[in-house]
Image (tube, rainbow, N blue to C red; front, side, top):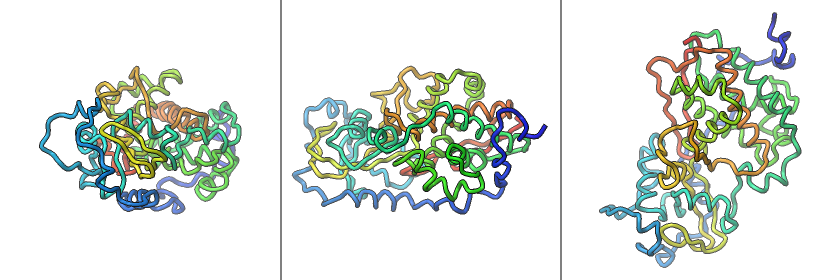
Length: 375
């Protein structure tokens, strides 16, 4: 029986799926160097370098300052320091513990790194010029969607992609699966033939579904790659999640967004003076929110560096809490990615000697995820 004639498989247009060994579509955008991108983002929101009077006092009696350990360091490190692309967590830790509020001359922005401050800045009206999928503007920008239909589309898309790599001796799940699933799900949902997916989905077709959140396809790719890396790193996690109910998979997905957020830094501007850990940010100033640092704050999470799919205090800052097709699709794609891959490849495991290495400064995820489909 052919794939096209089996129940639950996608329509005939999926027969036009291009060979994956050709690599990513040439239509995919070329990444901008992280340092230049972030500097440009900060520059757009900057009016002027703060004067010395605008800097927070070294000690202000706040609880945040009181937990600062004794240190001889007098200059805060920067997220743009060498090595930050490969391992930012050391810099994040120093900033959280010793410099909860600092002005970074490389970013030309104030920097926040503690969970409480970053979470506030992402939702408080005193911070402007920002949008996440799931934030309130989503309710005014997208059309109503049928969750049952999106669930069906995500399941069929993941099924087809998994079947295409099941018989290979080895595969790269980033290039062969994660790169295609988010765009393919949108393509199927809006009726775009798969052969036209990369040309149209990132434009008008996606806009019909997700409004302001059309650019989130690339973010969903990265989030999915990190999720699969976390799941496959422990064979016990993979086996348990394969047959887990949707609620448990959703918790595991949220935990991956928490530990390895695809967006590491967001830029906002203060609309009014705001008091935060370590001092006060004046009105009208650009602020860099270190989401990656906030999501590993030990004041908020137990053992924050550990991926725990059963964590009972999950939280993430990549997405807001409101309704948004981009947020819904991301969760469905994560769920059906695990189910489809392990249905098609029950012995799926990481390649011998391979360890996923996340990289990136503004957005972050493994560039490859080498696996052995047959175990």
